[in-house]
Length: 505
Image 1 (spheres, one colour):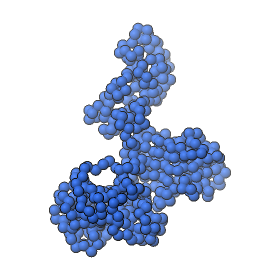
Image 2 (tube, helix red, strand yellow):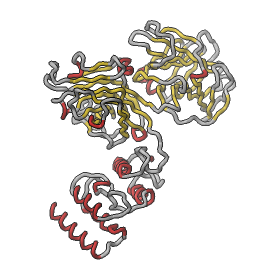
Image 3 (cartoon, one colour):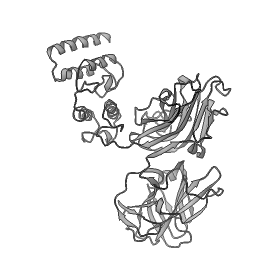
Image 4 (spheres, helix red, strand yellow):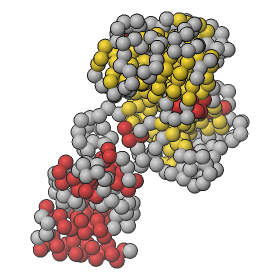
């Protein structure tokens, strides 16, 4: 694909390099259009494929509402169009319209000029217009809304593309998508008081619905779920808040959940949680419903004077738990994998703590792109390759995950990648539970403590199943004393240990 970069709204466009990796804040494509789209004017628009085929010599265009209202930084964000100009095209320009939400009743449409003159014809191109150097050419109140504040301070809630009003030049384009991206901002989606207030499908439930239980006066969620409430569940702090959205796709394996919160003086609860809903189909059968993934935060880890940042790598297996019932409104569970379709995000009390008072202040719960540490095998991007990364790899092998985990470049994610991780990247042996480069009694103790149970690498599980058993003991035995064949004394010790473990079964 050819990349075109616009230095100014009506400046000549010049060829550039391929598009940089960027977070997409809003994407208008045929998938979104089919969910929440509309067309207008006298356009001739075909959306039966995976792109917009536009052919018009009059005013017309199309647009769609985004799944959730999104904030972004004009200083670093840019407008991007991925399209092909048809040889029959005559028009020298087009327009993109972004709708800025300024509250439930007010907002503006900002219209941006896209110069098509002199661009390659018949080949896919990427046009990038940085907002910092591309001012809107026209502004008006959003359709059906009162005038907003007149400032480009998005709250982006809608994207449109259109021909120039009054033009009779034939505009013929194959538009793959129109989107707002920011190469410098890794945020994917945020639950904050601002995004909560802007959502058209926000909610509270349980004790969080009681007046005063949630206060956002300071642009934070001040949560005081007191067991003295007289609501639906009297005597408990059960409840939550959040918003729903149309399915929002992102790569969990490359993302993380960042929670900023602090404990308040009257808190008695041990934990709270962030809940994320993942839809996997049309709810017609098991596996095609929706799962709620819970990520718990231990309140003891929070400061009571300043906000503490808690970072939780996402990806299948990173959740604290999957709720024991499908997402509200669904009959069936999903597939049990974090392969979002995100349809909701919540802050809730934890069931085990509902008889205690939850009193916390939450600044934000943000899903963002993980920064690559640059270390091969560092799947959670914490700057070190360790047992946690081995466990993520094993989960990827079990789930048949994508090529992120194909360390040995074989084309498949399998036990060969585990061998590569252990022997090549970590330079150790199977059986080294604590990764101290020595397979010894400490590793044997870890295995024995979890024998016949479920554990990861650090707990003595050295293969690609989920149970610590004789197969793992065999792997440890073959490396005991850092030799393929144990010395006689070590062999005798392992024989006695194995016999004891078998008798426990």
